[in-house]
Image (cartoon, rainbow, N blue to C red; front, side):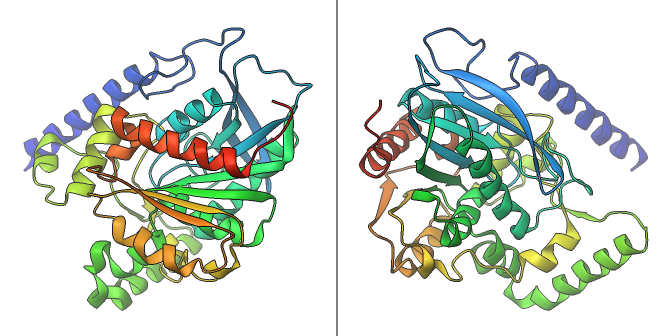
Length: 352
C-alpha cells in the first residue's frame, strides 16, 4: 500500500507538470483550440483585467471584436464558466467566438476560484457565484465602447444555473442564454440523476460538521477531486463525469482548474435551486443543450418554469453530450451560430 500511494502521488505530480506545460504554451494561459496567441491590430484581441468585487480581487479576460474602436458602441456579453472550470477553458472559447461576431465579451474566474482571490480556496457558494455575474456586468458596463443598454448574459454548465438566478433580479441584462445548464443546488442535494436522495440529511450533517471545524480554526474539508489517475478514470461509469474528467484533467487541463469545493459549501448549495423565482425572468431566454447530454433533464426542468420570459426557445444540439458542447467543433459551431442569431435579435445596436 505504501508503494501504491507513492505511485499515485508521483502520477499526480506528473499530471500537474504536464498541465502546467500545456498552459504555458499560450501567453494568456488559454487551453482551447484556436485560442488567441497574440493581439494583432484589426483582429479579435484579449485583455486580462483585474477588478474588485466586494473586496475580493477578480481575474477576468475581456475580448474585443476585430477593428475595435473605443469611440463606437458595441453590445456586450458576460460569460459564466462551468463548475470546476475557469475563464481559460470553454468560457474563453465562447467569449472569443462571440467577439468574432462583433460583441465585447467578458469571462471571469469565480471568487475563491481560479486566479481570483478569496479565502478559503475553492469555496463554491451560490450567492457568490451569482454575484460574480453581476460583478462582470459592473465592470464591462464601464468598459470603453460598451453600450450598457445592450448587455447580454451567457452561462455554461453551473454558470448557466447561476446566470438564471442572476438575471431574475438584475434587469441590466436584456437577453439571457444558457448552454448545458447545470442546476448545482439540485444536483448537490439530490445527487446526479437523483441518485442520492436517501442521504440528504446525512450529507447536510457532514457539511455542518465541516463548517464547525473551519470555525474552530481546523483543517478545511473538501469534496470533489483534484486530479485522477488513468486507472481511476477507467473505472468511472457515468459518461458525464468520465468525459468531464478527461476534459479538465487531460485534453483541456489548466493548473487553476479543479473539481474541489469546500464541503461546508454544501450547506448553501443543498438549500438552493436555480429555478426558484425563475418566473421573475422577463427577458428573452435561450436554453441550449446536447440531445445526448445526461444533464439534459436539468434544462428540461427549468425551461417550462420560465413562464414570464419575453420569448423563449429550447435548442437541442443533436448527438451532443454535455462536455462535447464545450469543445467539439461541430457542436460548438452550432451553439455559437444559435447564440449569434439570438443576441442579434435581442441586443442589436445601430452603431456597428
